[in-house]
Length: 217
Image (cartoon, rainbow, N blue to C red; front, side, top):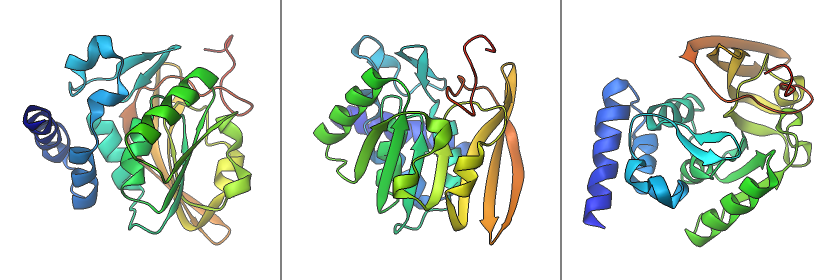
């Protein structure tokens, strides 16, 4: 356990904090979540390396820095209702669970959703609920959301996600084409929506009505 904790501390210090992520709550959450439990057993020795890792079905777990940056952009204080689009292995949801009151995470691939829910439950992240469906439509049943985090690339922010943002809520999303996207942070102020471009990124495609069709990607 001491070795695993050392790996996580080094990961946070060298890959996340050193690159400018400063939110103390985010840094502590990423020191606490056992990242290796969210990657396939065959590559667990690579769990804290500075790059995405495959988790099956053409999906990946994002590199630690991107997880930290996207989480920090939500500016969570602890009492929020958060939606994640693209559950993957459940790692990002686990980080969010330590920073928000409730987390709903939506996964397109049923097999990944089932595995993520089991992993999260086994590790004690009980304020996370995994759902299966079209992430580009959001999850209106539990809206509005103080934060929405999208872990797959979209042509543009899906209108349903913008509609499901609470007042003052933030949407963090990679938007662009298959060759690369811009990580954007959107914010709702009344009926006005504004956004800031953060940095270029490259994500797997978001599937669904407002995402990408297989033939397009």
